[in-house]
Length: 230
Image (cartoon, rainbow, N blue to C red; front, side, top):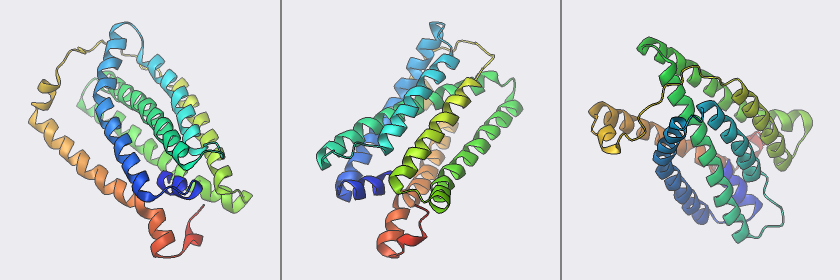
């Protein structure tokens, strides 16, 4: 919803928003590698993944809230800078959580069967979360008559509460320290990993394009904004 939200709230043209999103996502892609290495470095210094996730959860809550609740007095240029800064903070915090969560899952699993089971639970509850995030604004609009701005305030607070609560229950038992000096060259030399990475890339594009353009398609092509839940 973020592109549609900023385009309408601050009258930012879609070309600018598209360029900003490309820039932020490229930054997001590049930082993943360093977040993983740095997380392993922190783990080697006896800083638990539990602590990393909990600290990142606080910053993700702040980043998410600020992204969807910008100051009303911002100019279009100020809104673009706010958009870049808060969205970058959101992605960075999110990456720290996800990378350390998935690393902990891999270390917790005693065999491939358990690894599949743990990841299946993660994906299942992730799907539940996505569905809730999609329907909550609509429910708030229909039942409580909230405006779009108030919807995002409510959604941000609910998200922050669930995120912090979830991080408190994150207590990995395995404290094994992995080799954080493993080179990217060794990782990319694995043919199965490269094949899997290509599948992930194609799947991400297939999911992202419809999601990013749905609001614009409904409002501007179908001319039916009333069917949107917010």
